[in-house]
Length: 502
Image 1 (cartoon, one colour):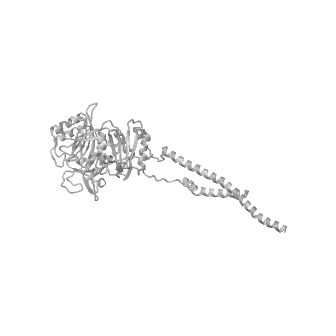
Image 2 (tube, one colour):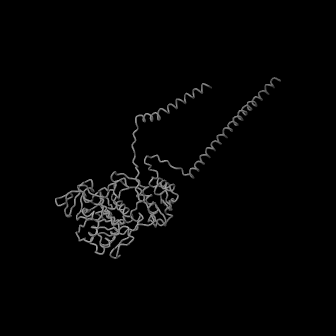
Image 3 (cartoon, helix red, strand yellow):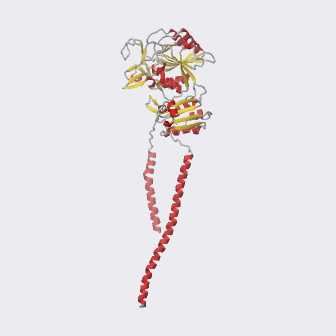
């Protein structure tokens, strides 16, 4: 009986021991897991805190970017640093609707790093700025860059951030050139004063509207001038522009222009040939001051590579690097001149008048002059002049005395700078927008106004094809294929060694 009672008690006690055993194991596991979990949670919390802290720090700190490109295409050039590094005037770069153009924003911020007098203002919601929309004739989604210094300001469109090299058919980024020159221009103490002669001309000044707008955007003041009505050429005239005449100027106007020249005046002549063969003796007296004559007749180009296809009177020529108008460029300026005339210098009088001339633009040696404009042939005929290089653009510098010098830039054409529509390959284009026509006129104005601060910064954005050597190729293949295999094998060996030690 006792024996059965003990066995019964033993059976009743056994579940209690098992329960305690499992409770003991559970308690130990809980403690270990609790410790490990606490450490894990703490570690995760520390990592998250470090991550958030680093991000907050990076948002507040502007780290310098490293430009590893050979031509430093993403860095401010030394030319810009030299021009703007020590500037002491406050300049604002206003970026309108440029939130999606991160590269432009990033580049603009480099100017702020360069000089603390430069600041950036971003306008991402143009619809809330009716003042800007009205002032600059913008729609809500238009983008624009405004460079301002005091009352001076210059605007830059997206199209002005790029140019096209007609010789290599490549688009070139000129963002730095545009912004730097804009800053230099708006810091100018005074605007250059340009007068456009409005009387006796073949075409109204309004037809040069796009070029005039670009002149104004280069921090120039442009006004029309009727010399006869005004009585003289204003004393503040920095440059006088004369386009093709339909009738001769008066004796008084001739005298006033010559007086202006002999006082060191600057002239830009965009004068085509006298196809109407009117008497221009008074105007020729002005040209005689520089020993220049514009021949009657239209120049045609005999080289098919230097004309608009099928139109030898639409001459396409390059203004070579190294002329006074392309001195800062590392590319040619290609210019398209419709119905251009031929410039001739009187070589015998150049030295007598103290004149130095510089040829800017010529046809190829296949160019020729046609005086019979009723001749329909697209090629040279017997009545045309002999084939030779015809001068289309030039510079004449006249030494007045030891202190004064008069300068003249002449193009034997006015149509290339006008808003004249032409049909080409089914498209309508303005002649002023063909090739680098506008650039040629603006460079001429800058040259005559002696704006030496203007510069052209061309960076090489071309993709470079890099070919590795055989040795370099072996090293690269080893890194790509051999190194991962070595790491895997080493891992297996270490795992086996540790396993055997257990």
